[in-house]
Image 1 (tube, rainbow, N blue to C red):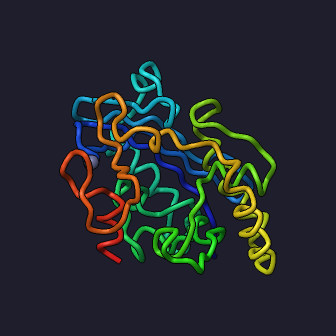
Image 2: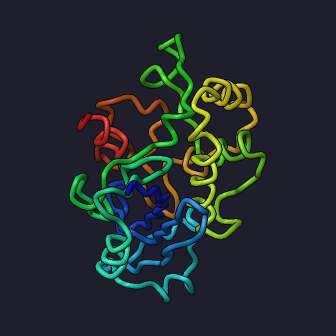
Length: 231
Ligand SMILES: [Zn+2]
């Protein structure tokens, strides 16, 4: 039987380039918005930044972290080939939890695609669409104000499921939800990583416009570009 879970992962930096990342936290929430698994994950290599204002992870929490192998085993034990994973985006969680479609899970639903706004003026935005942060969607569609790191990191997975539950049987309301996100585009809290190309000395991979093929501050192709290159 098909089951839905939402998963959120937070990454920490293990070097100074934007490609130097490791799993730092994972949370799995069921369709009733209950936590099935939540754990901090301690990378095998030295951490250069926890991105605390963004990830909500502090040093003392990281001390309690399990190994990446243990976290991945626990998550995979929850999933099966009938599981649909709900997430803001699938990129990081599939990569860092080492999940294989068809083997570990059935499919993903990316909320960022549910609420993206089609922009007919392609010059003014990337890829013809405007994408919102989870914080923006939660603020304007659920009426809940969440800030990076202020609340429990498990909230991201819970609110993802709450958004899914609100619209899963009301897909006809998605155009209105997209418009609501768009109407508030100026009211959004600026993302931490948009303010500076580096945080605690680590490249954040944000290069202003973010167009494909542009390499960033640290000389690497950004994670975003690697993603689009695969599509
Ligand atoms: Zn970079």
